[in-house]
Length: 138
Ligand SMILES: [Zn+2]
Image 1: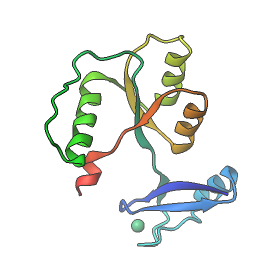
Image 2: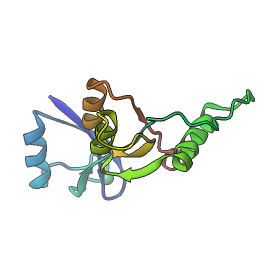
Image 3: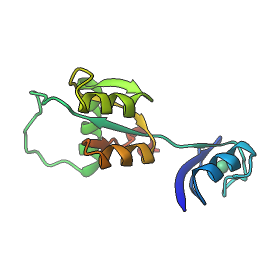
Image 4: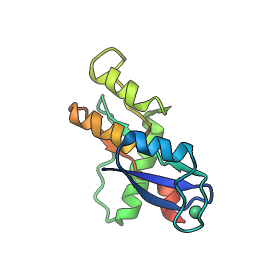
C-alpha cells in the first residue's frame, strides 16, 4: 500500500491510498479518484516544498526574542527564499547532484514529492521540508 497527498481542482486536500504506484497512475488517468468533499475527479498529486543547505549561510540571526512557532516558520521560509536558489521541480535531481559533487555546492529550494524526499533522505542527503506558509494562513 502506498499513500499520496492529493488535491482536487477546488483545492481540497486529501489522502489517497493505493495498492502501488501503478494503480495510482492508472486510477488518476481514468478519473477514478474523486475528491471526498466535492466529488471532483480533477485530482492531482500534491508536491511539497523542500530545501537543502549545502553551504553555511553567514547571516543567520541569533537573537533570542520570543516568537510563536508560526512566526518562526514564516522566518524560516523567508530566509530560504532570500538565500537559496529556487530550482522548482528539478529539486530532487539538483539536490542529488550537489550532494554527489557534480553541481556547485549551494543552498537550493524547490518542490518534490514525499516519495522523492524520502529517497533523498534514505541516500543520506539532508533535505528539509519547507512549510507552505501561504496555505497555512488560509
Ligand atoms: Zn474537492
